[in-house]
Image (tube, rainbow, N blue to C red; front, side):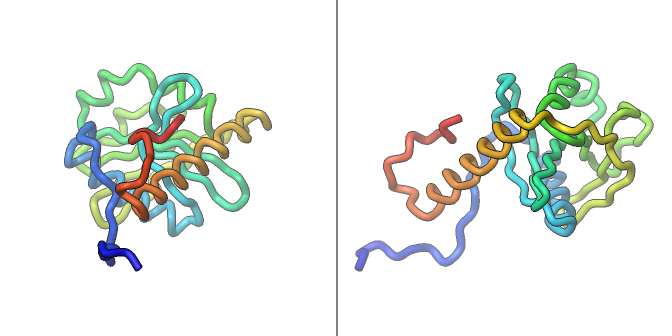
Length: 165
């Protein structure tokens, strides 16, 4: 028996890169995705060296990437979003209702979110991944999720502090 009690609730740590708005959009978007049968992992390093805000995986093996935008300036400064297409079947922008939908590229899906939920406003075009890329992304997703769960279960464990990807 351990002398240290295990907490009854656990929360993922916030790494400080996301604004409060981005965190609330991520929360609402994750809730929508779970209702659609997807599991989500945030801040996933991609093979290209980029980092996806949210990656979602469902039981059919479909992979969606969701890029969160908290302001018009955030979207305008982002020139990397096209690179995410190589790592997913569908690419979406998730954002607050304060932003007009018209500012987002037509070739992406749109999700409007707040801290409590989200609404799918436009489906993303499908561009199926190659089998090798799908396998790589599925492995990254699973490893990242398992490593985060292990750190929650044993915060004083011997993890390196990174997600190892």
